Length: 383
Image (cartoon, rainbow, N blue to C red; front, side):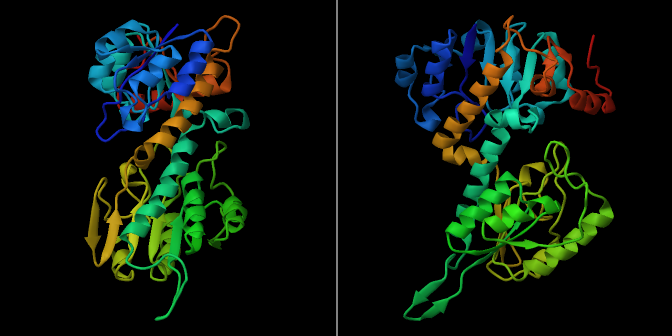
């Protein structure tokens, strides 16, 4: 089997799906690895490093896509990339943001089998493949550093000749992987941290990191079986905003991470709530690409409204491209080994990890979540 590692072409993307160390492991396992020239340059992995592992370098992406059996990628493929794929190719990488009717049509025409790494179920035996969590942890860490850069006061308690300066107060909304990493990082910088989440099960995790858990009414089924937060009712969101609003004016930094898998992010901070925040405060909205948790967020931009800086953070893992690439590379390699660790060397579609992550099989949509979403739009999902 020939494995292709293309150069990411999405704007601002600096990561690479497979680093040289992982490429060497794949080659040792009997696979041919072909890397597009410059694929690793954004993460400071040179073509020479790949060649030293035994990988081949190609300069033309058309030759790569048409000459390999499997593509390992990070960003969802763009139209021109799908058009270069040979019939029957297998794609492994992120996919959900590209799943529209036109994309599915192209995949079906080329009989592409695709696996979306973000659909890997959150179960114990898939932890080593969980790229979503790996990238979320980077985003949570980076969000605090961005906040510290924009905030015009110290994070830690400072004892100075001019007097004692109290620590910054940070509110983290959403205690998933990104939120917990944000809490840990803000605490390391010396901030006083409190966190809010609709899932009472995370209280112990929040407190173990030295933060205070902001209480609200307990919701027994606030979490899905796969560990994601559930979409809540309008009445619940109204109560949620009320509790968050009561904490905003007391904090200097707010980091929002609340997302519902496959849905638009809930608006938890309204314009009226922003008006009541302290001047000089900072909001880092990690849900900006899904619409944002703050009503005023503009994805990809930092703006100032009512004396508050609002950062619509996007693709933060790419800003730490070296470690992000290493982490993702380990995740996707583990997933690849899982898919092809079968007696006949083909994916076992009865296995939960394989079944849940498979979007198209030989061009036909087989993922139930994707199938239902496309059928609602009137898209044909099979011949």
